[in-house]
Image 1 (cartoon, rainbow, N blue to C red):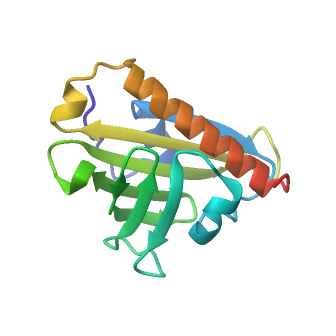
Image 2 (image 1 turned 90 degrees about the vertical axis):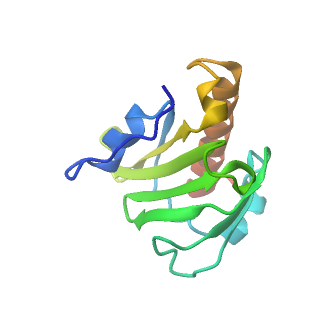
Length: 162
């Protein structure tokens, strides 16, 4: 149930995100320019992402991040970095096969808010531990709540409320 989704050759990032077990979205009345300014995260979000640091300034696919979250510290690998998608894969305690997460952020021109952005955050999990947690379990609800909090903080930052 918590399988890593496969991206089809013509699939847009938002379609992929919407199929992931944990999916959130929010309308932002601006472009989310602050998103890749990882050094500033502690100034505007006190949520589950405590800090992100990059090894490669270009954030090219294959480069590493250092992600400190409320749950763990990880060194995920960047899978995609484009104007419409930022995606990484990480392993809990660096052990592939135990608990792997593929996390994605999607930025789409908003239909609901002209000139704005529909920001989506989603994650799919694979490995031994996720297989033990059915869809809808408290763990997934907790992760979704964390995503919603981050999304709201990003919206406030982008719209000038922080």
